[in-house]
Each structure stands twice: as structure tokens, then as C-alpha cells.
Image (cartoon, rainbow, N blue to C red; front, side, top):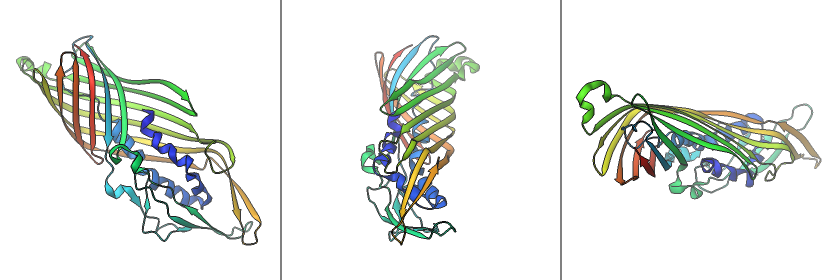
Length: 330
């Protein structure tokens, strides 16, 4: 799951934090608009791929699956405007979001006089989009998960990653899904190939990334923090045949994600007189993103002995393609 956010870390190597040189209210708006499709796409991608059938495992039956979920960013979310910003301007019609094209524009910033410092003007570069680095230009989320049958015609689905501490990255992932057979309450109907289940899930992922070694600004304790929480409430249905299953679902899903830029950032400006002016920011960015809505999924699973391969497509704000393989022991 670290791969989900790894494209985000490229901004730290391209001086993206130089946006902090702008007036605080303007810099926060640029951060938010630039990151918005990645943070929302992460919610949609990590919410997908929990199931490939409505059928639940028999008691102590298990399956282990590897899935790749990919959410497609709408074209409208690949660019953003800064025409409403007070102290930043550009000659460009718009700027790329993180999911947009790899181009940079000149940003002309003004820091108004405040009684201590004179008015300051400067030019910085806008952050690039990383669409070319994303598979299909979309937001990916690889997932490893385990399904286990438990009593009462119920299945538990577990997503878990041991805490990861390497190369300046700290990551943890926890998730739990519950699938419950509804046809058991309707007598003989549960003997037909049709299966209908209720499904609910919740997952959490936290990532801390040390940006100090890549930062273009001096300072200390510079860390980017990402947090992701999401949920699903779905009704599943599938027709389970000998070698192929067809499945669908409908329901409501959503979540929240957050981005924090922590630490001390030393800002240096050149005044009109040529005398450098120094300022410092502490924990400059703290923002939250939300995404939710109704969704519909259709898919198919192909079975061979204990192995399966599956693919499905979810219709929602960021349409999502999910595919994977599994080993099943019912």
C-alpha cells in the first residue's frame, strides 16, 4: 500500500515546498488544489477490491488474494485555477494538479509590507503534475488481503501490513471487512447458484515521510504525514457457476484523508535593497480531504482448481478498475 502514496513523494524532490514562500493563505490553497485528486483518488482506490463474489466461505475456509485497484481522475481534476488568489498570479490559464501534465509555470508572488518587513516580490515555479508516472494516468492501490470463514455464514476479510520503517518512510495499514450471507434466512433459495450478502468494511493507513534530505528549504524536523480512513456499506450479489462467477454490488462508500507538513522551514527573500530577509514557519500545512457517494460494481471471476483470477469496474466519482488473483480453500 505504500505504492499508493509513493508518487506524492516526488514533490519533495522537485522543490514543491518552495510554495511556502508565498503568503500563507495562498500557499495553503495551492497545496490543497494540487493534492486534491491524489488524496481523493486514494480514498476511492483503497476502498475497492474487497470481494470477487457474494458467496461466503465455509467455516475456516480461506482465500489469499493480491489485487490492484486503479481509480481514474476526471479530466476536470487534472488542472486548477489560481485566479482567486490575492498575492499569487501567473500568465498561464491554469496549473496542473499532481495528477496532471508534467509542466511548470512561473508564479509571481508578493509579500505585502507588515510594518516590520518591506513589500517583497519574487518568482517561483509551480509544481509539476506526475500523470506520466501513474499507471494509465490513474491512482493505484495494490492490496494483499486474507478472507476467513467464521460461524453464522459470515466471512471476515483482513487487510494488514506490519509496520514499515525504511528509507525515511514509516507506514502502517489495518483494515477489516465483514461479509454475511443473507439468503440463509430464505429457506431453500440458498441452494441455487445465486448468492446475496451484506458487506461492510473499514480501513486505516498512516504514512510518515522524511522530506528533510530532499527539501529545498533549510530547517529541521521536516516530515510529511499522510492519513487515510475509509468505509463501505454494500449489498453484494453473484451467480456462482462451475468455472466462472458473475458479481455485482451497490451501496455507499467514502472516507477521509489528511496531509500535514510538519517541522521548521526557514524562508529567505531578497528585498529591493538587496538585503536578505529571513522568516521561519513551523508546521505550516494541515489539511483534510473527503470523498463519498453511491457506487455500483460489476465483475467476473474465473476459477481453476484452487486458483482464481478476477476483474471488476466500479462506477463512482472516480471510476475504479480492480483486478487480481487469489488462492482459495473452502
